[in-house]
Length: 333
Image 1 (cartoon, rainbow, N blue to C red):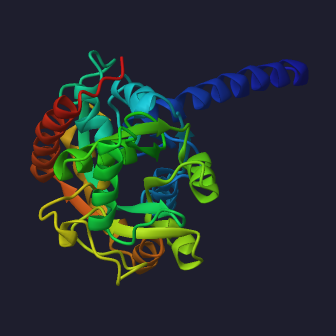
Image 2: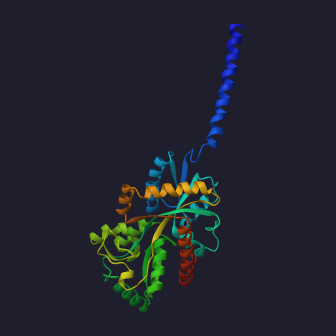
Image 3: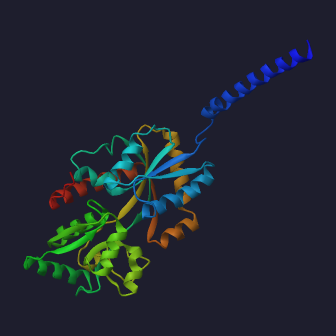
């Protein structure tokens, strides 16, 4: 064989070999154990919010333990329905997950006549990762200093045909739902003033444009500075950010609890092997001291419930919110 022919043959052989090798990794990749490529976590809320912080904190740890990068995709809108629908309709291969607030799965089925997804049939909850409460807060000018005084104030205002206006971070938001639940529980009238998100709501609350709201407990700095009055905590345990501030349940309304919890979920149909792996890795991440401490500073508690415990909690909350939504005549479509 001439030198030229030998070079041509070698060139053809190397090109063919390169093509074979180019196809080989994709085939091999498909057979490697999960995960073997980046994982997307859909967060149905704006960047920088509590849910986003929880998602970024956990995926930072999961990317190390699972040895694959995580990509956060913020898809806010419609009380979490838009992002959750994207997860529900994704391929159930473990590469698209969601992190949603419980009310998207429990209250929204009653708030909306028709959802684009069925929370029970179209999603597979992996774990309840964190829980947090809210604080009933009033502008410094409001002449109340406790939950009991606020209820009396609200009832007096309603008797004068001037029901209290309360702010919330959007119709169907946790703060909106909490206040409707509380006013039904305590027996006073009030009407909502919805905002697009927490940030502008806090701005107007601080300026006195609105007088009262359920706010994140991270707003405690405004209480310490005298700009807001903290009246009560919405969950059953006190906040570590304000251990002297009683819960609403302690303030004359036993059993009252309106807490938010974040749920990691996958599309229905995900294999139980992958689901079990994700459950284990999430539980391990939630036990890391630096994760616990970071969340503690935000008044966020780690949870870690999995399997039937998650399903039972969601089912119980779905039934409870159905009664509250009906009692408050709340409808968002």
